[in-house]
Every structure is written in structure tokens, then in C-alpha cells.
Image (cartoon, rainbow over all chains, first blue to last red; front, side):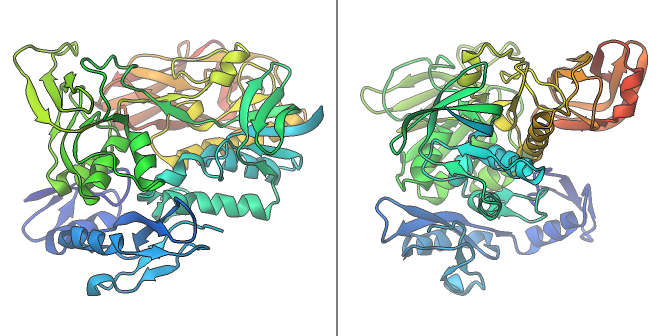
Length: 113
Length: 415
């Protein structure tokens, strides 16, 4: 029996997972999905910000468009540190495709005119 | 002096939602005043995700969440002014702002919505003991430096207070290469969301010390050391329990307070939430001045701010059309187990059902929430778990108000 805090929404359910991977304690169907992923291949979404090259003292926020493996968080951060972009930027714009081959893109999360 | 039907002060999650809703309810002569150089308020610096699950049924970052509202403000052609700091407000609804572009301008409004958000408690506010050195900074300020200005605030960090911003900053600083030594919380429980304790602390092996607070900060110029001590039931420091941490930065996440200095200019009655006393329309005791969002009471989730702001926007439209009737009013009071309840009074002739919002004083289980007027039970709801960090909302249908002959009290009873 394992216990986890679900991180899918602000409710933060306490999930219990038995040896047969049966999940209890969830309030919605996303709970069991999260619990099984967390025990087999835990992933996280990374958010950060990068430099805007053609605006003084300006940063633009970014995120991974798909969650990446938890143990690759610091490697992805190192890659994000190398990135920069020229304005205008728009939400969803890809800055780096398939980061570190993890099947996740770094995308812009803020519109700058 | 120029006349405007509705002035909205602040363009954050509350201000924009209020403006959009007022416009959709037929008010065209609107002006949003924003002190910063862009719309969106504090959401601009909240680059982490987790916003919008209620509002949009998807998980968004702060800037993504606010952009959905900016798009609507622009589509609906709602006028706004940036870099415009409101510096005065009068009872007859004259709003004075100052901006580089316009200079000092006074406008006369028929209705006003205050959406000014909240501010952080500082080292002075908690009487932080010890030296007054550099390296002591509030979590929101650290967040702005890091996410907007691209500046790291320190390398070895202790965080005081386990509210959500403190937890979010623990993760953010760790990912950016700082060593977060611990988070210290004076209460025996964290006020942060469970998910943030998991994904911001547990994920990075950052210890959370409960019932512990800073008993001393040491540093000649820059912070050199923070001393944490355990506290007893009365939150008094227990001598001999000191833990020392060598660090260069102390981040304070020790509470948010509604920002209402403008309301104080006009002697607007203030409640225990430190925001204005309001009726079910989010109208203050000053006729035609409405308030919503974190300047009314500090919310845990931005989605609830947007929702509350829509009520304020809709209400301002009703007010401008002379639809709000102020015949009689009933007080709404927090009873056993509650720290506050909103609204503080209800106008009897209500056009909409009333959403009662409250927080509990401490974590409790197996409770019945009773809404009573004298001996008459208006609502009875069973709640398995209630915690102070989660605001509770229950609906009181307007038809039930006829049964409320005297003040309404919301209280907890054990099952």
C-alpha cells in the first residue's frame, strides 16, 4: 500500500494505491491516472522564463507543452537557460522542439506585442 | 470634470472579469485604471501552472490565464489606462489618478469597482527579531525579481511561512539553482495546498518544519544566519530548541492583506477580513462603490476571484440601472468555528441567490454547516473535511430570505 498526494488540481486528494494498483481516495477519474503514472513514470510540467532579445530588460514566460520525466527536470532547466527569443511573441509559439528528445516542446506562455 | 459611468480600479484577475461582465450587461461607458505598464496585475509574475481548472477546465499558467481576459477586454473595446496610479477617491465618487501621459486627472464616476488586490506582510509587520540586514525579502517581491526582471535573489535560502507563494518560490528558486534549506511554518499545519507541498517541497527533498519560526536573523551587511525555534501552543518560542541555518536569503511568505488604502480615505466600514463590509452585490457601505477579489478577502484560487468579480460587474450594471433595492437588510455573522463570513449583510429584496463564503478557524472533520436565522434553519450542509486554507461557498436561495426574520448566523456543529 502506497500513499500519494494528487497534484492534478488544487483539491490535493490523498490517494491510496494497493499492490494490484487499485486506487482509492480520489474524487475524480484523473486521480487513479495520476497515481499510476506517479508510481511507474512520474512526470512534471516545467515553467520558467527566457530572455527577449530585442526588448531591454524583458523576459517572457515559457513551459513544457507536455510533462517531462521528473528526474529530467534539472536537465530541462539547463536547456531552457540557453534559450532566448525576439518579440513579438504569442502564446503557444514553439521556442524549442522536442527538448532533449523527451517528446515535449518548450512553448511561450505570454503575448508580447 | 469628465463623467464616466463605471470606473474599475485595477486590471488583475478581478478588474478585468468585472469590466467584461459589466460590459456584457449593457454598460458601455467604462474605464479601467491600471498602475502597471500592462494589464493582468500579479498574474503576470505567476508563471507557474495550475490556474484555470474551474474557469476554463484546463491547466494554465498565470500569463495564459490573464491573456484570455485581455483578449475579451480588447474584443469588447473596453477602454483602459496603463501607468495610471489612482491617488485619491472621494465619497461622491471622484477618482483622481496620476500618469506620465495625462498628468493629474480627476474623473467623476456613477459607480466604482475596487479591484486593487492585496499586499504582503513584511519583516516589520511580523516584528522579525534580529539584525536589519539585506537579503530579507517577501515571496512576491522575489517572484517579481526572478520571473519579470530575471534576477536571482540569493543562493542559500530559508523560507518563512508555508503559504502557496512561499512553496512555489521554493521550487522556482531550486530549479534556478539556489539551495533552499527549509521552509518554516509557525502553525502546526501548512496553509499551502497539498499539491504544492508535494510538487514544490517533497519533489526536491526540501524539509518543512511545522510549529517553528524565526527567532533571530543575523547579518552585518548581508544576511548570514537564520535561527529557527520551536513554538508552543500559544505560538511562544520555546528556549533551547534553536536550529541554525547559514544562508544569504530569507524569504517571507507570511500572509496577504487586502489593499484598501483608497477605501480608508472615504471611511468605508472594514470587516475582519481587512476588506470592506459588503452586501450580496459586493457593494460596500458607500453607495455605488463595489469591491471584489483579493482586496475584499484573500482567495486561494484565482478562478474564484474571477467569479466573484463577475458578480461585482453584474451588480454595478444593476446599480447603474437603478435595479438594486435597499429597503431592509439582514446581518450575516460568523458563528462557532468560523473566522469570517461574506457578505456581512444581505439586502432583503434580492435579485439573485446569495453565495455565502466563509473560512474555518482551524482544520476540522465531520462537521455540519448550519445557516440559521434565530431558530429557523435556512441551510444545513454536511462537510467531511474543512481547512482554513480552503474557502467554502454555499448557496442561499433568495426565496429562503423570507424565513429570515432576524440576523443570520453561519456556524459549525459536530456531527
